[in-house]
Length: 227
Image (cartoon, rainbow, N blue to C red; front, top):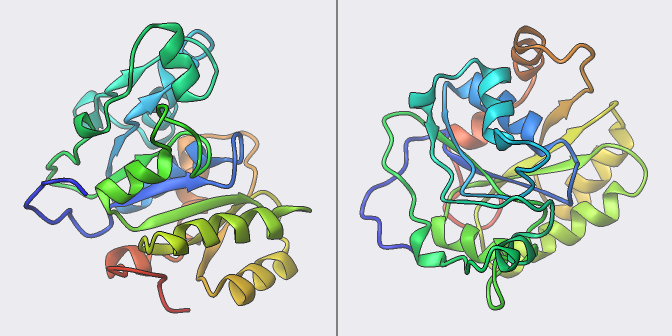
């Protein structure tokens, strides 16, 4: 747990996913736009392929200025898990250097990959989540296979007693999958963000209006938001 003595602004959250490329960054941008939040990507890999990182994508989609972006602490070139990308650059990610910044707005923090992605030889992404203790939003693809992956992620969060605000699905609506996850995972489904073509700030802001953000405004302190 971190030493920060202050409480984050209501609406602040940690966005994680059931895996890589599940729509986490677009959902993070939607939350930033809907909440009027600032954005932080503490650890970024793959800057060779995406020089501005996910922060650049969120800034474009949510129309953020530089003052609304908290600088990334660790940025690595290789598109690998953070521990492997860091090792290639002879860097060790120090969890104690990742401290929740004080902001005047809600803060949306985006993780890398899923909850057990390694940050170092000893720590995974869930250790960072436990350190920051923000309400967690799980992003999951909406289609086939998502029930198992999402429930496994929720089990990992429940095992560590982390505060979970809910799940947001990414992709075409699949109400049966959403119902199964809500029932079996005892979790609140905050909505589904469809694939947008074209993906523009205006289209994303409009789609974000359909999300249920109430568990972020009045978040759980531990465990799962009631549903």
